[in-house]
Amino acid sequence: MFVFIDDDKGEHELLTLTVKAMGLNNKIVSCFDGLEALEYLKSTHDRIFMILCDMNMPRMDGLALKRIMDITPEIKLKAIPFFYHTSSASETEISAAYSLNVQGYFQKASSIVGTELSLTCIFNLWTNCIHPKSI
Image 1 (cartoon, rainbow, N blue to C red):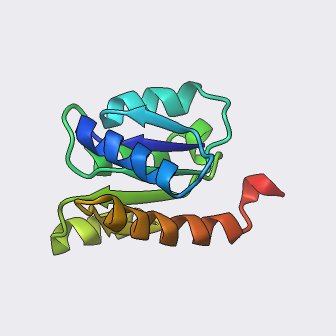
Image 2 (tube, helix red, strand yellow; image 1 turned 90 degrees about the vertical axis):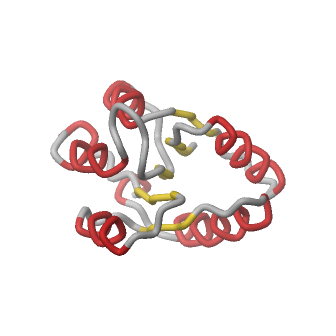
């Protein structure tokens, strides 16, 4: 299961279509801003494979969400891989993201094929990576 956080409903539809086209069986938990995601992450007992998060969202953006996750013990101990999947690619935002020790920063593609390329890279890496919660 992975968590996808983005305020654009169209992005959720594109991601769902891409995951189906790739033949993946991962359940997607959709959140539409950082605050909604934070509440889910605090309350769930589900084992989360990874988080894909947009950078710019209302109520709580991706940077604020990651900062709060890092200081919230019940979330931090889950050791969830965190990736930004966003339209913006400014040097400032990329530097800010990596200062928070994220596992990757990917610019959104506008097609299923482009999104599939990004997801394939991410999924291949993390499917084969030993994770603290998998031992």
